[in-house]
Length: 346
Image 1 (spheres, rainbow, N blue to C red):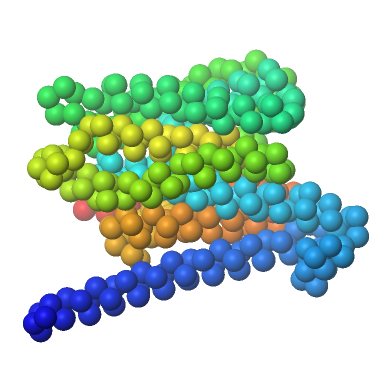
Image 2: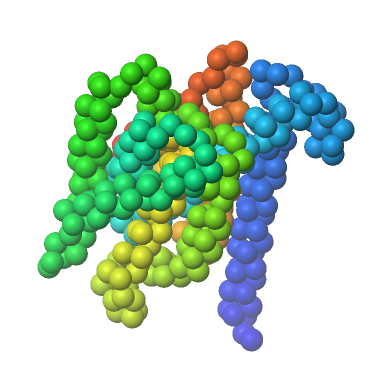
């Protein structure tokens, strides 16, 4: 091995160590946010009370607070953050557009419309109803994605990234208008639910919703991770990807389907939370670079931390009331989106 090869190997080891350190740092942040969130809320539990309750020594009230209310909500927030972040990362890679996000493309809105219709007409939260929600969300998101794909596709050139984004924004506007028309005819109870959902309140905060969401993530995340190298190739552009032997349109459709399914399953239990799929991939990409083999886990952890921290702040900032988690994320996400938009124009 000559000096240049040794230098290259040393550089690769240095990068690998740095990437591992960043992923570990995100993991530590996620653990810290989990611990802080368990001890944060309107009902006061000291760290000692929380620890005692976790190991089975708590009172009935402490068990209810921790296992009935806080833990399922914390778990939902982390799972939703990871799922939406991965969905946004895939869409950004496929569209080669840094401003892409499942919320901005209308996928969340399409999923939400079917969920709202279902919950408004079938108010039961039985196990069957809860497990039906992700499937209905997938139907709504899938129809929306197919519509966007069909409108943005051209036979000669395929899908141009900017055309995909503009089509998504237009479709989202149409779905939002349809939702507004629907809201006019609701009673007070139904209106409260729709308002909470649209604001991104994590309304499905019990273990039934955790069990409804978890299988989707356990199926989709390994598939997405296995496509990291494919997405690296697609990110180079259609011509180069074809030259390297990739079936561009086929892989693009598969990855977009995975992104839609991730976003739909998360939206079904959390409500409409935008900007997670925008902020988390950007943050992770700045730290670990564009390689999706490392970017995917870093992005998922960043999204989980973002939603978990936002949800914790939302629960305590105006006690005894709660701010919807989606609003807390938007407070950070909207200025960041404008910043990215300004940079892209420059």
